[in-house]
Length: 253
Image 1 (tube, rainbow, N blue to C red):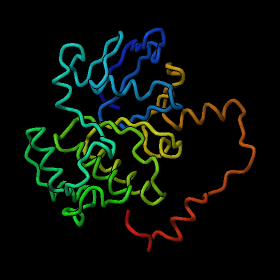
Image 2: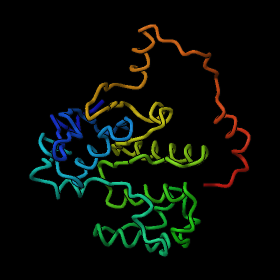
Image 3: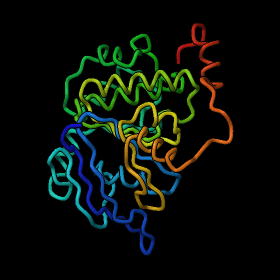
Image 4: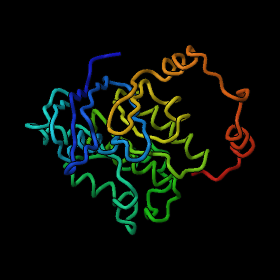
């Protein structure tokens, strides 16, 4: 793995007497997909929002691509892309209009159709955002993170609520983006997603990181303790059956 592009040291976030993030430290390497995993309320979204400059920290130090969060937040904003939820878009504008709007906000020039090609949405260029399916909305949301040509993009539960085919389409897109050299940090509740996509994961619970390693290493460590699943693991699962049976005819999402 290459050099760290994000360094978080002793990060603390308090809300009054409640400590949501309890002195966590980790690094994200350039060009990797890094997963931050944990139950609701564990502190993962708070941590990401602090790195994204969207929320203030109580204490600790953070650097992003060599920029210090405390003194160079504006510089950090210019080199990151943050996935918006559906509520962040004007539903009555079409995709070309939305891309042009974001280009104006970023002061960037982007060929809208080429950008839509990257997320397989060229045929929806004149469709209004509210007319898109769930998977299409998520792909467009990720497309908007690329407008400012970021070094790092943040994806917060990008496949939640999507059907299996849409999830796998989005996985392919995320891997394609990483293959261009972009670093990706994501949160997810789907362990199969983290196992497939992430080079490394940090597991956070009650505001503390309790493990950080590659998915394979974490699994090997568990198996080494003598752990066994209570039932045989089959070579395929029901999701694989669904996609195999419907993949050639299912409506593109």
